[in-house]
Length: 370
Image 1 (spheres, rainbow, N blue to C red):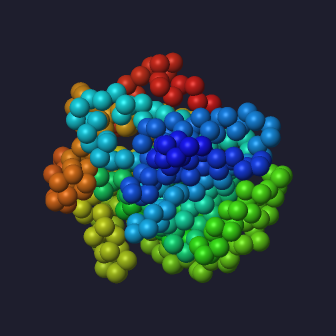
Image 2: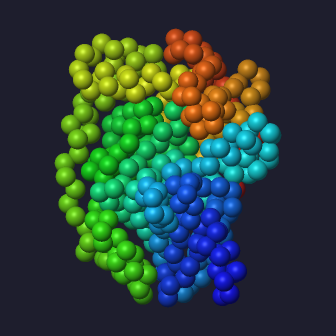
């Protein structure tokens, strides 16, 4: 490879490498905490499809690129500045991004070969989407997992409704509304991670994985490096979380928290107050519907919701454009949510988000099967 070709490869949003019988995917936008764009989604999808069909490939490893001076991240989510720009411009690439990203999430959850996600550092939003379906989710002491979408007027997508709904008790509702970040002990206790390893040994662990010759070796290699996590602080809050977040709707959840003078409940209230009232209500409904759904159906439901977020019509609107503006564009952190308060959220507006704009056979994710 000449220097010009090497430079072009280094600039790719995902590096696709083959090491013996193991495929390696490196999310390669460290200047943006490895946020996903449409090209990254397409490169991940193509590589995974190619390796699924190649009998010589026995497994896949996913990791994030690092850059000196930048925080460590597997992937901090989607490129929200692109969402804002494309949403305002009506750019069809925005619809393509969500359709193809959700299809990629489904592919990972149903991947026919071992898929090992090295979830070091920040793993949020879209980063959860490319790692939660892994057959082995490897965390370090630097891992911070979250679905913080209500903070920008969105909902926990990329299969978030599905995997949060499968957390113990009402932890899924709590995580969906609050966007609370989880370190390794809490993430493992919530069922969102499998194994804890030390970050200092991650490079050597990856090298060992890439030398594997049989599928079973991948899990054995990780198991030899595993450390016992410390007790989960979040589990100590389970009784309170289950009691508050089992309430029938968002106003009742908030009323339950307000009636609890404890430090934890009051802290959760402070987390929820700045977030989009409408999208908290939508997110609560999403997790509860997803609890009884198959993954493919849940992803189709999320695609319906995302359409309404960026294509308001018939009285349905989202807060995403305004939320991203406040957080990432103007950075004033003063979003003007519509409606402005929880008591103004119309339950009918929440239900409208779950109305699909497509007939079943015309749905952009109609081909997904579990």
